[in-house]
Length: 327
Image (cartoon, rainbow, N blue to C red; front, side, top):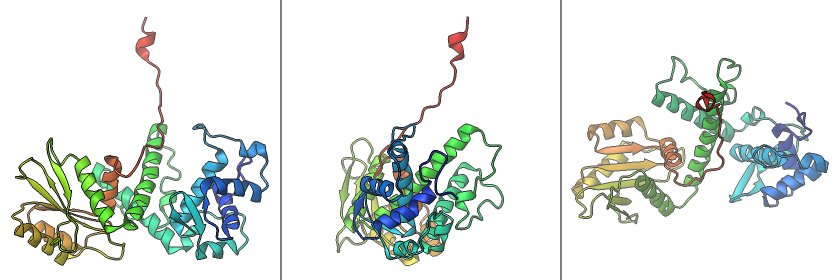
C-alpha cells in the first residue's frame, strides 16, 4: 500500500481517505467535483492533475473514480442519483480514523464488501464451469480472495492476462447492474426482462412483447408472442427480490399453475435474487417447460446482449501482417 504512486498521483488506496474527508460534510457531489476536491484536499500540483492515461482520461480522475466505485460497493458511499455520491455512516466511521490509505483488503471489515467479493467469485466460478475450465477445488473461493486469485500467475501470456482483466471489469459491471435492478420499480424490472428476451431473439421475425404485470396478473408478468397469431407464446414471471428473499418451490408450482390455466407449454421465471434447491427441483419436474434465470445469470445475459449497458472502451492489439512482407 502506498499513498502516492511513482508518477506523483495518489494511488486508489490513497484516494479513498481523501474522498471521505471531502465528503464528510454530507454533500451530494458529482464525480468531477470530487476529483477537484481531492486535488485540493491533498494539495496536488497542476502538473500532477494534468496527467492523462492512454485513453485520454485524467489519471487522477481515473483513480478517484475507482476509489468511489469500490467504496460505494462497500457501503461507505451512497449513490442516490446517477453519477452523484454521498457519504454514509460507515464512511464517516472510516473517516474518523484519520487514515492516509485504505485498501480493498481493509474494506473487508464491511459485510457489504464481503458479499460483493463473494458474488464476483461466484461469477468467476460460473464462467469457468460454462467454459469447462473449472479444475478440482477451484470452486472453493471465499470472500476476500477474489482480489488475489491471479497473483503470481507468471505463466499467463499477456493477451490472456488482458482478457482476464476485461472479464473481471465486466463482472464488476454485472454486479452493479444487478444492484440497480434490485433498486428499480417492479414495473421497470418486468419491462426490462421482456426487453432482454426480445434482444435474445425470442420474438422471432414477426413477434411482439406485452407487459402484463398487474396486481391481478395471475402470476404472469409478461408474454412474448413468437408469431403474429400468438400460437407460440413465452410467458414470463419476474420477481425483483433482495438477496435474502430466494424463490422457493411453491413459487414455481404457482407459476406452473398460471401457465396451465392459460394452456401454455413454456415459461421463464426470472429473479434478481436466487432459486432454492426446492425451486430447482420443482422446475425439473416440469421437464424443461420452465426455465429459471437467477440474478447472476440475468445480468450476464444483459451484458452479452447489450441491454441496460453501453460500450465504454475498445482495445485493439495489432500483429505484423506477414503477407505484407512476402516478397
